[in-house]
Length: 84
Picture 1 (cartoon, rainbow, N blue to C red):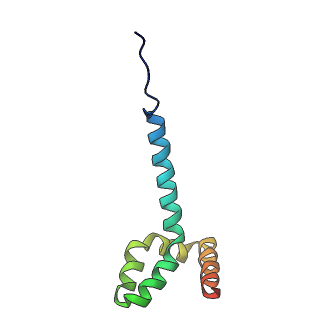
Picture 2: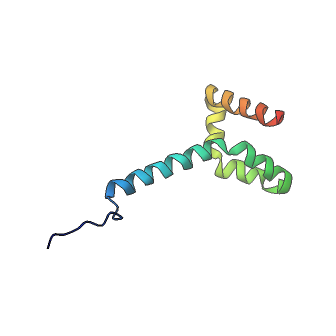
């Protein structure tokens, strides 16, 4: 008898590709999320605003303070969100 390979069996590369795609999407969502998240936190949990900004988003705050193109991106995003 010949061995048949199950077509539902996943390959290691599939897991790696999915993991990399998930990590990339998580990074994109993290980069795009601070202003909407901070707006919601400011409305509903104003006492937590500093904690969220200086804790979870500290790397982005650092980049905003030290890199002009990051500052320009978030300033543009802020203007866009205020327009809506």
